[in-house]
Image (cartoon, rainbow, N blue to C red; front, top):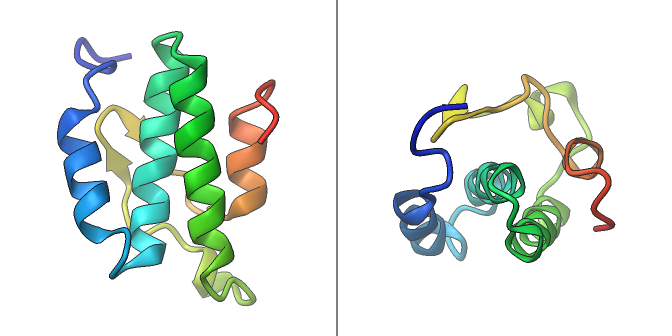
Length: 98
């Protein structure tokens, strides 16, 4: 884990700027923020952004392999899985119930 892994400020700013205009990109940002929050022990923040990620992925078409391909390799200190969708978010944030 990187030294600033608990600092999600910049990612959150970018997330809020794009969440209405680019649901797919914002979903990955929310996932990264949720992972960072979980790693730092902030369960409520992890739940908030994990749920936000799932909600945004639900707004996207996720039927084809290409639809699930990650747009980002890394956000902050979080490696984004090559394939990412609602199920991946739920699995990676266990034991939190999203």
